[in-house]
Image 1: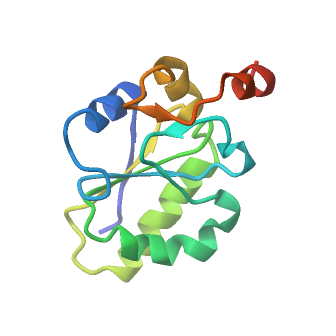
Image 2: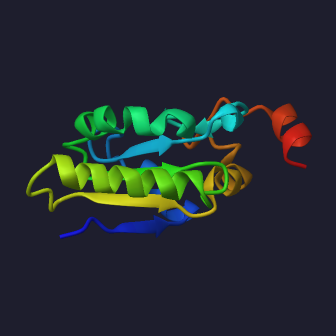
Length: 138
């Protein structure tokens, strides 16, 4: 049965992070931004740059094989995040048998939208640099 990939919004992800569930055990957030990773990130995410993703997806599947929810995003989650999520889901399906208690999700609107709402919440965003966002994205 093919692995399905769903979208989650920033409010759902913020609730999950604050729910008391354990990152790395109950869920894992994978940020596939490349050079645009600077200036802030979702707290506890793991950066797997999209430019190297094909080379590292097998190890990521092994590292997350016991994690029931893996969430992907990039800056806008329009290309890199969704592509990485599909590659991960397909690789996982090919590598792990009977993998029915697992979910792959994409953060709708990516880190750009997430940081707009949560940049001032240290439980949700870390390493946020105002100058990066003023110069790069305004």
